[in-house]
Amino acid sequence: MENYHVKKHQDHWDLSKEGAAHAAISKPTKSELIAAMQTFVKHKTVSVKIHGEDGRFQEERTYPRSSAPKQSAG
Image 1 (cartoon, rainbow, N blue to C red):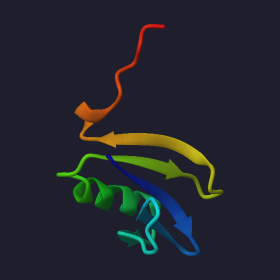
Image 2: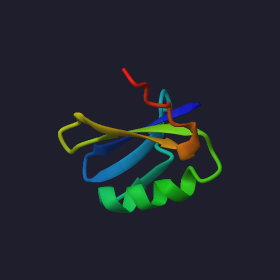
Image 3: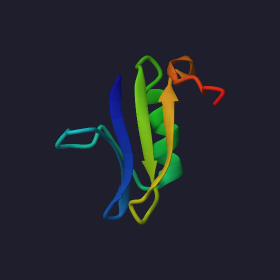
């Protein structure tokens, strides 16, 4: 599974593959980037870690949803 990060970079937002030198997608707002990201990952199996404006981790999304780890009961 490939790992990507959504992070603010100067005056725009980037979707970058972990370890890559350049962003796969850049958009002016986080919401625009999230919308474009959903199309970008449509036929991929990826984990996307989404960060806030301050760079702190907010949430992780797995695509397709069927690839998300199952929750255990304890």
